[in-house]
Length: 181
Length: 279
Image (tube, rainbow over all chains, first blue to last red):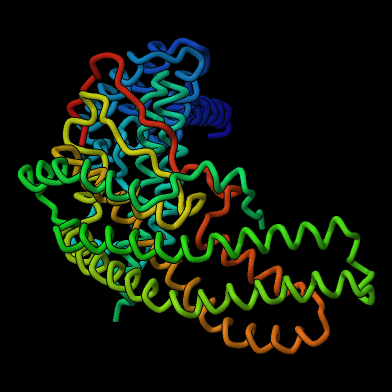
């Protein structure tokens, strides 16, 4: 009995070491945002990470990609982001509506802040300050997408002008609609 | 507030003949505008006629006031040049001040006489436009279709010619209405998008003008009484100067605020990328 004890201890130790090694959790994705200046490389890194467990950080990846694209602004970048968002939709990371909204918020001239099915009097006028605030924020995103990423000042100026005109027309229309009950 | 100089006045096209000529020139365009009726009806003929009428009433009032305001400017200059400020006891200064006061009363009389017609014309036009804007833009449009209207169909493909917005002051009242009339009447086949902006601009301008006129009317009787009292002392009050400046601002515009509301139109240089996600 006593002679068998050292063997038992050694066996237990070996087993413990083996179990210990096996129970080290598999390394999850680090979800480290893409680095560098190359948009194509950053896009493929982002795709890989987003389909291997980092989908919760989609927004942060998207922002980083925009920041990288700012380093080499050109009209073709718009298509890259469109393809990326279509891919995100196909992977189930974003719904079609979310993909559309995100694309148009940054690269469209029209304002997704103005989406709505009810009349201007009943939908936009009761919340006009908030609507304009949202549009202003969206204009800042368009500045990044259209001007800094896509190098498309004409589209950005159209968006800017649309904001000014909408502000004026909403002021007049909401005054004409009168106070809402 | 900036006052109008003689040079400013001499630059302004100042005769009824000018208005008539403009109206005659605009009539064929109006015909075109009516033939190619826009899908939103912001400017039916009645509203156009009201705008024209308001311009005529404003012109009439300006013509009546121009002489007396010119005289006021000269008298005020003489008062300043004679170093009368702080020297009110001087008989010469008192005389200038009384003459100035008389001109001021004359101006108030003319205003009291003409303003009701002006107010009525402005309010009638404003109410008509209000109804059209409420119906056509407020009730028939969603926020999304409103922006589609503003951006204009096909605006992404061709550079749309848009009217330069001139803000809500900086011109004589009559010239403003004359310009409105021409803008709308000339808009022809363009441009529901521009019409919505023009209608909004005119409507807000009229609301502001209407408020100013109402305030001025309220002030006139009080100012008249005050000035009748001041006549016995021969002084120029700051209030007098303010009222004159206010009248000038309404009628002849304030050049300091003449900045345009929006940037110049943008044009598309080359073919746009169209994403499948494009809204």
